[in-house]
Each structure stands twice: as C-alpha cells, then as structure tokens.
Image (cartoon, rainbow, N blue to C red):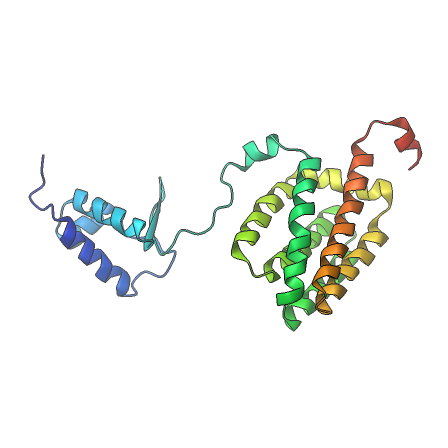
Length: 238
C-alpha cells in the first residue's frame, strides 16, 4: 500500500538540509527512519530511498543493526578476522610483512617529519624499557605502525592494519616471543630498529627499506627455528 505521504524528493532535500546544518558531525548516528519520517512529515519508504541516494553519494553510511551515520564510511580492513587468522600461519604473515613493510619504510624516509622521527626513537626506548613480553609486543607494534603511518599512504596503511591485526592475535604474539627468546635476538632487534630509524632520519629510502628487510628476515629465521621440530635446530640453540 502506498503511503499518502510518500515523497522521496522532499525527504532527500530535507536530509540534505539536515546534514548541511551541522547538527550531526561526521560519524554521528542519525535518528531512526521512523523519527526522520515523523520530523519531515513523509513516509518511511521515502526516507529509506533518500538515504540510499545519500549513501551512494558518500554523504552517509549504514551498518545493519546499528543505524545510519553521517559522513563517509570509515575504513574497516577486515570484519571477519577470526576466519583470516584461522586460515593463515606465521610464515604467511612474514611473507606479507617482507613485501609490505620495506616499502613503507622507504616511503617514510621520504615523508616523515622531524617530530615523527623523534617519536620513532622514543618508541624504541619504550620497547627497551619493557620487562614483559606483552609490553614489548605493544611498543614494537606501535613502532612499526608509526613507520607505516609516516609513509602517508592511506591504502597501504589499511593493508598494514589488516596484517597487524593478525599479528596482534595472542597465538602469534606467543610464537614471536618464543622465537625471540630462543634465538636471543633482542639486542639484535634493538640495533636493527635503530638502523631503520637512522636511515629514515637520514632521508635514505633505499637504506631504510633494506634495514627493514634485514630486520624482518631475522625475525623470520627465528620463527622458522622456533616452530621447527628439527632436533639439530633445537640443539643449536640450547
């Protein structure tokens, strides 16, 4: 049955006025379709259709079960992370890191500002101050994300965040800490972190990329040894 108050164009113009009014900041949830229909004195179907137009224009975004929000949809790297984690392993994560993070370091060497670089050195100090694995993982992840952020490429940062969310899973954190402890790589990691940041500070993109690559290869080698059941490999680190 057609609602006598159906007028999608009126609803669209009223919604445009509402968004232009500043009443709702970017990310703010809009009233329900029922409330908007009552406010505009139009049918709910008209409101729904008008919202579809605004969503197509990127002026609002909707999430099922949560409502409609002003502005563009925020980046959501991967909603079903559990499926992704279950279907990957530490070596796959390292393969992605080796192909992504050297490029991020290279771009950071071109684009990071002085304050960004000071922040990177501060994060190395934070890692060194930690006496527990959880703290080291926290600050290590913060350092690598700071480098990724300073690459100043939104798409690459989204890709990094997908990978980093997998890295943050407790199972992967435990494996990495076992690898570092078995191989006694913490002093090496400290020096490698410094080499990466020194190259970024020196505006040396190729040097920064190579320093990051060497750092990740060291971690990859440690992971291989920690997850190997080769008795020879185990005896070489006892």
